Structures are given as C-alpha cells and as structure tokens.
Length: 262
Image (cartoon, rainbow, N blue to C red; front, side, top):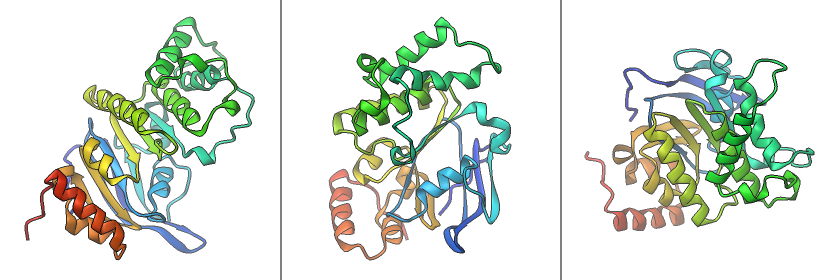
C-alpha cells in the first residue's frame, strides 16, 4: 500500500540503486506531503541509508528520480538539511562544537561573506535546544558519540531548512535525549517542516512518527502511521525474523494498534 499525495514536497519515483550490480533499492516509489514527521523503517541492509543518500544526490540511481519541491536536489539544497550517520563523519577534523553548528549558516550567506552576531546567537540557541550549549568551545573529537550526534542535529537546525533528512540520528543517544529530540522534531513539523528519519526502534517509531515508510530493498508500504504500522505489513518487511515479530506483536497488542482489514 502506498498513499498517494496530491501535492508532494518529496517524491521518489521508481528509484533503483545498485552497488556492484547488486540492488540496494529496487523500484521504490512514494511521496510525502509537507508538515509530516516520517520514519523510514526496515531491517538491517534494507536500503534505508541508501535511500536518504540518493535523495541528497550522494549516490546515483540506476533508474527513477527524486524530486524535492518538484525539483532536483541540486536546485533546492538551500532548503534541505542533512544529518549523516555518525560513522561517516571524520571526527578528527579540528573544529569546535560552535564551529560545526555555524557551518549550518553558510548556505544562508553569499560566498566569502562573514557570519554575523545573529548567526552566532542562532547557533547557540540550536545548541541549547539539543542540550549542548555547555560544550560550545569543546573540540568535536573530544565528545562522546551521542554528544557528537546532538551537535550535528544542532547544525541541521541552524540551517533553518524546509526539509530535514536524517540518517540514524538517534544512534548512541540515551532514551531521555531521544524523547527530547523527538519533541523538538515534532515542533518543527508543527511549523510546517517535513522531517524524514531513518530509524530502527519500532516502539518509538509508533510513538513519534505520524507517517511510516516500510522498506526492505523494495517499498513495502508508505502512508499515515495508523494505516501502515500493522502486523501484515511488518511481517512483509521483516520476513522470517520470528523473535522480532513476536516482540512486535506484543508491542502492538499493548498499544492496541489496528490490524489491516482484509
């Protein structure tokens, strides 16, 4: 099942991406409306990170296309913020926490123009939002994994984008911080921003996302949470991982989640 969106802010059409002739994504096709907090959910190796990278133009597709605001990514990068996986970043780069967050302001400035006091004040507010204001002069390499991830979230916030694409932003973050950041993302959604997050925890996915994309190389389902987060689609997504499905079934029962009608 794929819910069709009349005026999508994100459109992925028939997207296939291969690595060494092996498909990581196959014919993926979905769209998102503006103002949703959406999760890309699926097992390890399902192509979730590849999908985000393809949307950012970081990997090339074999076929299909991605449109943001009905335009290619290169025409709208200033409206898109990206949070990569922590493991893909060179954390030895000599920069302070504040320097990293200020990098999010460069897209808002002309070439060679200086950042202003207002830019710095905004960066400090973004650090405060993720609980990292006390580390502003600390070298990024000296932080824990969870702290580094929060700094990159602050950098994305400093971009003041319309679309936020986030690849496993909660990896290495404790449950309290995860809740705080989800609440922050919910506020962005309420302001009309569109947030798309690669995520692995099904329980928090059901709790916080209002739009779900189930992926396992091919698209299984995409749509509002109540339509998609049901046992039939979860089984198709996770296949024969019985331990996983047992825990999911228990979780759905506890949440009184709906079952798709036949």
